[in-house]
Image 1 (cartoon, protein in one colour):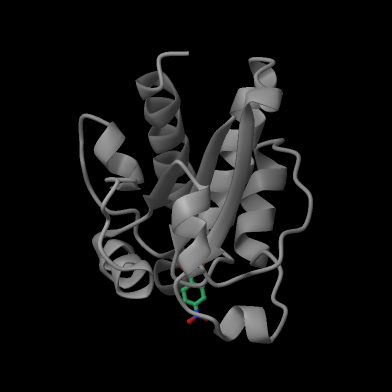
Image 2: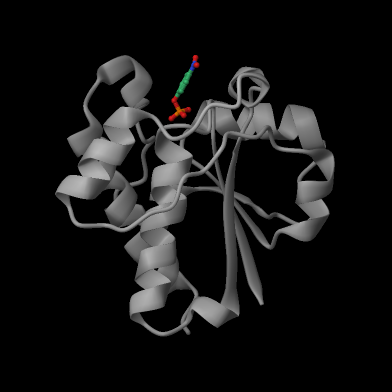
Length: 152
Ligand code: 4NP
């Protein structure tokens, strides 16, 4: 089982989008039984208010014909570090925040999604940019590159 945790700040825009897109990609390949996939945030405020996926993320997923179930925001926990094989952040700030929660990345599990591509960069936060189309394109590019890197 390959366990993957996608992480952003609020766990309502980018990381649930990455979780859903990656789930759909592995399902299309018939590999869903090989993976356990989830997402989390580095901040806890959306967990406290039981927030679901942001409507901008839902809208673009529906527009692109990507099926999804509701996901409720949760903050990353220390024990996630031992449990997951890959902890994949959306931007550099997420990486710093994850390390401040889980401590030293002794097993080198923490990466940034677009570092799997040949154009390493952050995925901008659509909570601030409002540009969910750009987020979608970046997430698809990153998930494809990550999947390819696994050489399954
Ligand atoms: P995300 O975006 O990290 O991509 O889920 C955000 C969502 C909510 C907030 C910030 C970023 N917020 O401040 O509530």
